[in-house]
Length: 400
Image 1 (tube, rainbow, N blue to C red):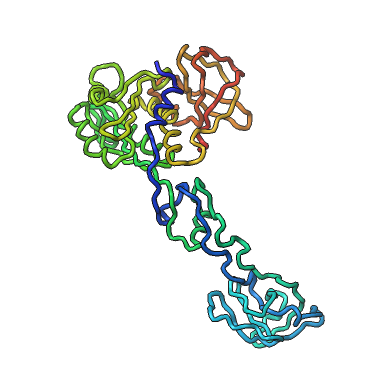
Image 2: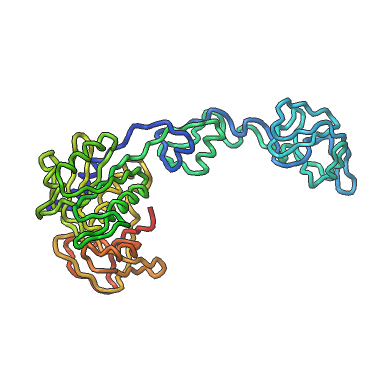
């Protein structure tokens, strides 16, 4: 059997980055920069007022106090956005709003709170210092400086900086476009009536959501029956638009294994990985498109996604922290594990006490316990039994 580490390497090699693209800022949210972005202009681009108040010359207000204010005529009103920029004459003041351009000749701004708020004349009760309440051009960033580095993920402040610099688009590493396809003649769409032997299809929504949570794009296809012709035709119809295909089901050793039966002749490798759950796996290229085939039991499918596909996706998209954060915790109860297989048990991590409670049986169909878990307990392949209080490695599923 292939080890978990070996299969992780195989999937990492399979999933590769897309070429960078220029995305409009709204569409670039959550994407990493493909290269450094240089400031093409300074911020601020001009000297502007940090306060609502009055633009003045400091020398004109020497000695101004609350008891002996200095009164100056108000020669101009300068709201934010005024572009004509009349200069400030000596022994006058301009009423100015926050963000408005400081007029030539002014060397400080007096907040309106330190005046009588006059409109034709203003009584000023304090003498400012040179440059007080004036935002200097380029004090935030100078033209030619690196504004954002390659690999930074574009969130709200990064997009605001790009917009402030005048960028309408950003060079980003685009998401991996993934097609998710479940297989099985027993599958029925949720909301439809069930007959004996049928089950509701759940892997599609589960894996597609996991892809999106990892930062990729996912198209969830309608599941197909155990018909090789239908299965292959579905793949051929949709593969050209995908960077990755993920299937679930049909990869085990029994009869009617549609994925395995259909794709073996196409060069897809099917094998066993020394893990529980998720032993049957497959991967390769279907007519040039990377494909990863997961087992059909829901716990096996999602654990396999976490172990193999999620980190590969995030690496290919240059997103930070491709691996789930690892920590150690003490077991609240004993655990057994099959020798020779790396076991991933569902658990509830208590971060305050540093303990982890394994929940549910290890079998791969117990979806309820998977939905209640916030971590995976990682038990090495050479460990068969752990006692209460033993320290184990856990994967924190609540953190990216």
